[in-house]
Amino acid sequence: MNAKQQIKKVSIVGAGNVGHNFARAFRQAGYLIHEVYSRTQRSAMLLSQSLNTDYTTDISKLKKDTDLIILAVNDDALPDLINQLTIKNIPIVHTSGSTPISVFEEKDFIHYGIFYPVQSFSKNETESLEPIPICVEANDSETESLLLSLASSVSTKVFAMNSEKRKALHIAAVFANNFTNHLFHIADEILRSKEISFEIIRPLLEKTAEKIKTETPLNAQTGPAVRNDRKVIDNHLEYLKSNEEYREIYHIMTESIYNNQKKK
Amino acid sequence: MNAKQQIKKVSIVGAGNVGHNFARAFRQAGYLIHEVYSRTQRSAMLLSQSLNTDYTTDISKLKKDTDLIILAVNDDALPDLINQLTIKNIPIVHTSGSTPISVFEEKDFIHYGIFYPVQSFSKNETESLEPIPICVEANDSETESLLLSLASSVSTKVFAMNSEKRKALHIAAVFANNFTNHLFHIADEILRSKEISFEIIRPLLEKTAEKIKTETPLNAQTGPAVRNDRKVIDNHLEYLKSNEEYREIYHIMTESIYNNQKKK
Image (cartoon, rainbow over all chains, first blue to last red; front, top):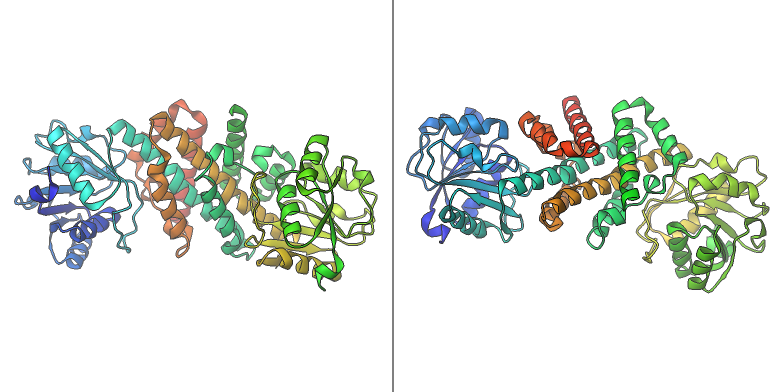
C-alpha cells in the first residue's frame, strides 16, 4: 500500500515539540497539514500560523474530512483526548514510546496504531525525520502496511515493533539520552563553580561516543569505579558533600559500575 | 623555557592505560623513553618490548640519568611509590586528576608537579595527545614553565591549573564520561533483553551530543522527567522493578532532573 495515495491530509493533535516537528516534516514530505489542535489558543494559533493552516482548541470539533490523525501529546493527556474524539473511521496514531496500543481499544476506532520517533525534538528547530528511526505498530495488517509506507515516506529507518518492545526501547532512550544529558548538566555545574570551561571536557565526551561504535559500553568503561580506586572515590564523595543529590548519584553510579564489571 | 632542550630522556612509571599512551605519544613527539617501571614483570616487559627500551620492577632502582619521571599509576599506589623513590633531583610529575600536588611535599624532591590529561585512554589503542587537554601544575615557576612547554610539545590544549580546580575537573569528567558510559551500558542491556539493536538509539545519542554544542545541558533537557509526566515515570519504574539497582538510578536521576528544572 502506498501511503501517499491514501493519505493526503494529516491532522496534528498537540503543538509541543513532536507536534511542531511532525507538522513541518510531513509538510516537507508532501502531505497537507489539514488542521492542528492544541489545548491552549495561544499554542494552537502559533503552530497553525507557522503552517498557514486551520486550528481548533476543541478536540470534539476536529475536522472529519482528514486522512490521518496524529496524536502528539503527553502520555498523561492521551486517554482523555482519545475519549473525546468523535471521529472513529479515520486512521489514528499516537507518537508515544510508553503508551501501549491498548489505549485505543474498545473506543470504536477502526484503524489505529503507533508512530513513534526515536528522537528528542526541540520546538525551535526544524529537523528532517529522514535519519530518525520510526517504530510502527497497528491493530490490523492493512493499517500496519499503511503506517510502514507512511513512515518510509519521511524516514529511512522504519521498524515494525510491538508495544512491549517499544516500551523497553523508550526506557533505554531515557537512560541513554535524558539521563546522560543530566550528567552533562551536573558536570557543567561543577565546572562553572570553579570557572572552568565545559570545552575542556568535550574531547572526552567525543571519545566516549566514539568508543562505543566499536566496543560494548561495558568493555569501554574506565575510571575510578572500574578500578575500584577507593581513595579517589572517597575523595570525590567528600568533595560532593555540599550537594546531597549529586553525592547520591555519584555513589549509586559508582556502585553500579563496579557491580556490573564484577559480573563480566 | 624549551622542554626539548632540557628533556631528552623520559622515564615512565606505570604500564597501565596512561603509561602506554604517554610512552607512545612522547616517543612520537621526539622524546626518548629511557625506562619503564611496572609492579609486575609481565606488564613491565610487555611495555618495554613494545618500546624497545629498558624496564624495572624495583622503583628504588630507577635509572638516575633521566630528565623527567612520569608517575602514571593509580591514585591508591601514588604515595607508596613516591616514598620509595630515591631520585630527588630530577623533575617528577604524576598524571592524576584527583591527587593534589601536596603528595610530593616534604619528600625532598626539588622540582615536581602534575601533568594531567583530560582523556580516558585505552591500552590497546595508540592515540595522539595532540587534541587532548593537558592540565599542568608545579611547585615553582621554573618547573611550571618547563611542564607547560613539555605539554605544548605533545598537545595543542594546555592549561595551568591548581589542584583544587583540577579535582573539580576530574569529578566533572567522571560524571560526563564514566557515568554516561554506564548509562549507555544500562540502555544496551535493556535493549538486548528485547533483542533490539543499540543502533536504533544512536541517532538520539548523536542529537544529545550535538545539542549541547549550542545550548546548556540544562536547557537542552527533554523527556518525561522534565515534563513531570508521572504516568510514564511510574510505568518505567514498574518495568524496572526486577532490577533494583537500575530502578534506583532511574528514580534518583528523574528526581534530580525535575529538581534542577524547577530551579531554572
